[in-house]
Length: 325
Image 1 (cartoon, rainbow, N blue to C red):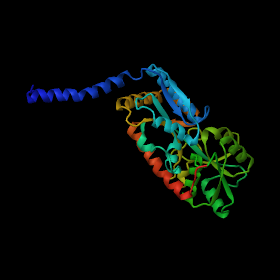
Image 2: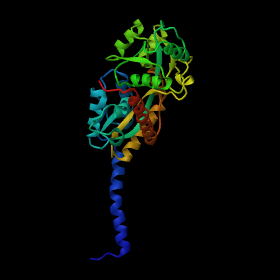
Image 3: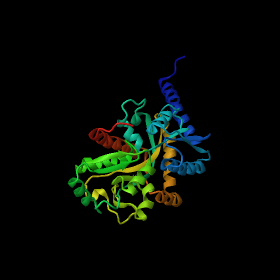
Image 4: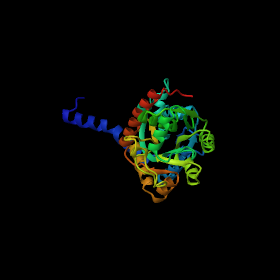
């Protein structure tokens, strides 16, 4: 039977619209079962804490449990690969961190391409790093430190929780932009690093403010500057590195990603709910307590942040010749 052209086009248009309508209805109903947020680090650390904070909010808002699943190992690559290979249905999400953008260059042979295979959903928080020195180091400002380092080339050590960590590449960025000659001392975690920094075994670090703030307030460590573009509310009298080294910026950030091809309706729904959480006074206050500030925005804005970070750290890693441990 032949259909009149008008009727055929009307029928074809209706048929083509069915998948879109189905996807819309799917997104509207989402979630209908528990959702996993995969975290590439052990329980108890900042990444895990941020995941649980936003997971609890999403559970309360969307009526299904958002379950935190810790899969530490390989600088978070194990967790990332698990999400890359998961169905793109919104039920497996990734807590994304700066490690993801560093690893894109640091590791030569990954089974995924982060920027291609993970869809940005929502940014959550930006955290501050602080350039801090043992009080025995005879400097109180960034310019004094640069001058001191240039008078003592190769004699000053800067510590990090491990090779290729955000704290490590932050220090290498400082070296690259100031032409100072410091040698890197990697540790296996922040706790032993801070122990040696406080005792004077190493001279300086670029550490997460969350783990250093107590030592700064007690006078065991001396803050020279925060590494973000703006000052921190937790240390309002401490300047930024960028005040003295124009263009310098390094910070932690955390967000949510999903497997590529996750329906846009689900991505948009999650983004809307995360941003609603970031506007909640209790969550905002909790993030400040943890040494951070809210980082709301669209999926596209989060995607741009990720792309910019990959580009920035690629230059630093190649400049410094950093290799994974």
